[in-house]
Image 1 (cartoon, rainbow, N blue to C red):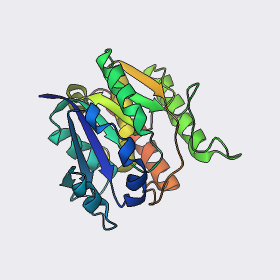
Image 2: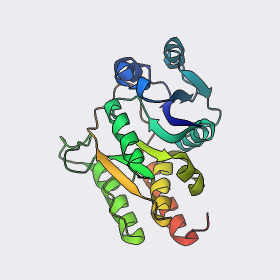
Image 3: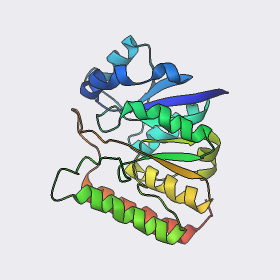
Length: 228
């Protein structure tokens, strides 16, 4: 088994890819491939020119992309990266280092000292406050000390990913991953990240439906306990 697998998640991200690709430390990982869902804007053609293997995602959803990437990765450390401008590619090596130092799951936090959230320059920070509320609830229920339970920019041991049996849909997979890692008392670490402004494309996370889905999975995780 290889040591590290960088999984790039895309859906029409040519604008972001064009600007951040050269900053991705591909030479620092053992394997890099892309899970793409029906991109039509040149994303796949760009990656093919860069000799990045593309896995075609048939079923929509970020959760599905995570599961496909994890199942096909040959590395013992999985790093999930979205090239939309929000995620700082230079953090990839920091995520790997934390796993190498003993963590099972490492989250790039937008809310610790030294970090930046995309909404920090705004007066009304709806997305940030919602994220912090969901994190607060998870910490209270499962006795965690996490600052950013939802950010999808993260690394995890493949063996730990497999223990979690993640079955959520859409953008809830990161929250479910964090909650179940807390349930199993896995070692969770965070690094501060500077969240950039989104470059091109459109987010698939629509505020109200996504929030309701988070609430559904939060309640579900409370009732199922460790039966997963």
